[in-house]
Image 1 (tube, one colour):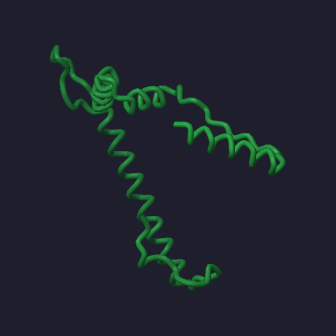
Image 2 (tube, rainbow, N blue to C red):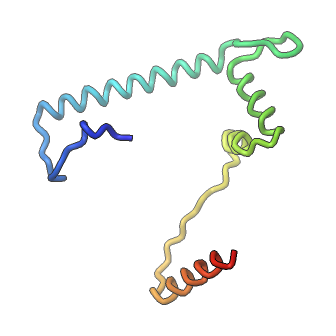
Image 3 (cartoon, rainbow, N blue to C red):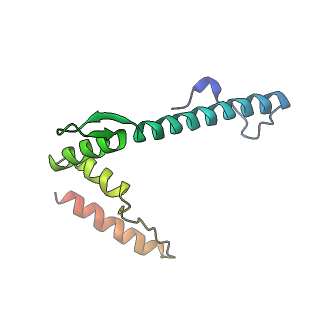
Length: 120
């Protein structure tokens, strides 16, 4: 959620002063550096030995994560099934089709949906 104190009030055509531009640029650069540092740390963790399996074999952070996700998915946790599917590259493609349709057709479909919802 945005910090209300940081939002500009009133006119959306506010012209930034050079000082405001500079301050915004510095904050933006700091945030980019922090995100980059976090990504680097996560990559190191994923590649580092963090635990051992039941047989005493070393597991990297990434391997341990996969094991936990698989265990939770097999318990029936749908969020972990989605995580595994999406990470493996099998996320379904969502497509939006834009069509030029008369308002009367839209109204008719909306009424059908509304009536179907009232039947429940």
